[in-house]
Amino acid sequence: MAVNNIQFTKIEIQIAKYLFKHYKDKYNARQLARILNINHAHANKLCNILADKKLLIKEKIGNSAFFSYEYSNKLAIKFMEYTLSLEEKEIPKWLSVSSHGMNKFKDYIEMGLIFGSSINTKDFNDIDVLLMYDMEKSEDIKKIKDEIRKSELVEKPIRYVDIAEKDILLNKEDKIFYNILSESLVFHNPEKYAEVVRKCRK
Image (tube, rainbow, N blue to C red; front, side):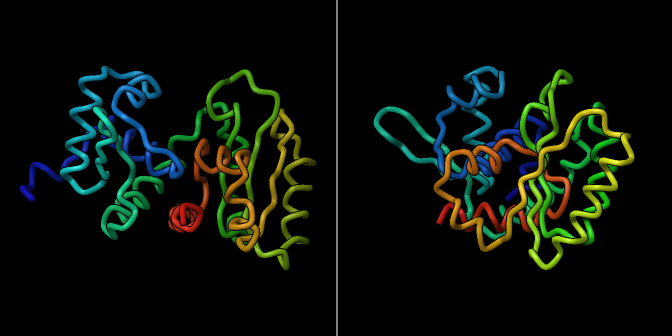
């Protein structure tokens, strides 16, 4: 692969990340263009470039080409782990105080996600957070939740979804759980998130 082919545009990264997270679905360029608010022809060109770069799989179904992430390519997974590691910097400014509070969980959880309306709009009612951890850490987690609540720095209520890794596979067919995983920002352990996605699609 030529060196100039290794570079990625912002939109290419957006497409790759969207497809990685939406592991149950395949999308054609027209659908992706609508979802990501980009030109259809441009989306089609970028999807083909990403397939050439071995990040996406292209599959012809009828007259249309559908794309999904290349989960079996180790380098594609490493690329996504790195990309997801930057999501913490993408957390909206209006969540900066609450995301600072979330840092307190990092020593006790295996994975942390923020999901729901708060990651998309300033006008949200509560902050939805998924914490994946070993249930032996429950007491520590409870203390941190109480600390965050008592500090009153976070103006909106935080709703937690607490889950153990073993429960992930039990919920993998659940539509709500799929929406949480696919429409979220990773604030802790992108490598574990990538691993969870790969386990869920099996």
